[in-house]
Length: 507
View 1 (cartoon, helix red, strand yellow):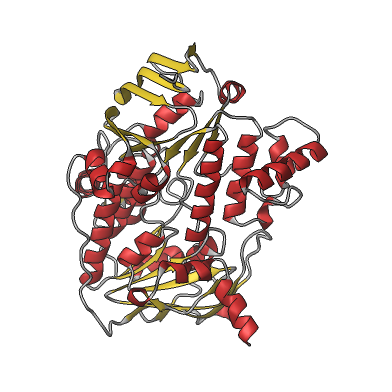
View 2: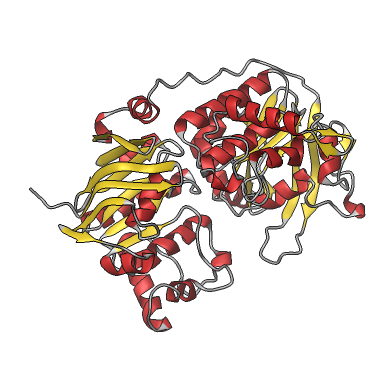
C-alpha cells in the first residue's frame, strides 16, 4: 500500500475545558484532494493549525512521509513542505506582487518575478509580478497567495474556504488549477462549507463533529444531503418558501448617490440607486472590493454624507443622509456588519456586554444603569434561539468560533424587531446547518413584512433568499434583476463587468 503523505494519529487539543480535537485520525494520500467537513466548532481550524505548526497537540502524533514529525512553527512546516492559504488574505496592498512574495520566499526581485511568471503560466495562475496588490481583483489576489505558497515547494497545500470570495467563472478555473497541482504531485487539504464543491473537486473527505471524526468517505459517492446529514447528525429542513407580497412601503431608498472616500485605496461609488420595500429581500452581489464596504458604511451611518449631498438616503420615508448610526437605529434600522470582531462585537467583552451595544433600548437599562438580570435574559434567549455554542453569556465574544459569533450577532439584531434589516455576509464561515437556520429565519421575517437588504458573495445564498438582485461592480450598481427570471451566469457577467462592456459597445 502507498504510504500516506500525512497521517494524524490520536490528535487531541483542548483550550481549558473546551476539547477542540479528540483522538483524531486522518490520512492524506499523495496526489489527492482531501476535504475536511464539519459544523462551526467541529474542530477543523484547530486541526489545520496543528498540521501547520501554529498549535501543538496535547497528545497524539503527526506522521509525515512515514516519519514522526513535531512542528513548532509555520516556518518549520513550510520547510517540511506544508503550505497554507488562509481564508482572509495576508497581503500588503501598497506593495507589489513580487514584494509581497519576498516577505515569505527569499530571493532577488528579478528572479522571483521570473518564477512568479513561470508558475502562473504552468498552473493557470497568471498575475503581473510588478502590479501593486491594491490594483488586483480578488481572484488575482488569491492567485498571489497560492503562488507565494507554491514557491515554497509544498508537498501539502491547505486551502481554507478558497472559493468564498470568487465569482462562478473563477471557481471552475481555480478547480482546474487544483487538479493540475494534484496531478503534478501536490496533495491538497480542502476546507469548505459548499458541499457541491466538495463533491466536484475532492476524492476523499474526513467528517468532524464535536471535535471527533465521525467518518471517512468518498464524497463523489454521496449527494450533498447525505454529506450534510453526516456533518450535523440530522436531516436538513427544507427552505422556507417566500410568500407573495407586493406593494410594500419603501423602507430604504437611495437616489443617485455619488461618494468619493477619503481613502485613496477605497472604491468610489457612482450614481447608486436602490429601493427596498417591506416584505421583500434585495441582495447585492459582487466580487469583494467593488464598493461593498463603502456602501455598507454609508447605509449604516458610520459615514454620513456632507450637507450638499443630502436627500440621497431615505429610511422609513425620512432623509437620513446626514444622520449618524444611532439616529438611524432609532427609526427602526438594524445592521449586521461583515467584520464580526471590531464592528459587530468587542472581543474582550462578554456576550452580555456585547448585547448592550445595540439592544440597550429594549429596557436593558434602568435609571441609566445596566439592568443585569434583563441583559442576561436577553443574551440567554439569543444563545438559545440561535444555537450559539458557548458555555454561557459571560464568556468573551473573542473566544467563540467565527460561525458561533456570527449566529450571536445576527440573533441580537433580529431580536430588536427592526423595520429594516441590513446584513452583510449573513452566513460567511457558518456551517450548513446554521446557515440553513439563518436563511429560514430571514425568509420568515420577510414574510412577516420586514424589509431586508443583504450583501453577499454567495450566489447560491442570494438566489435562495432574494426577491431582487443588484450587482456592484467598480462602484456602480446594475439594474434590479428579478431573481426568479435570472440565471447565475447572468449575475456572473455583471460581476466581471461583461455587461458594462457590451452596453458600451452597443452604444
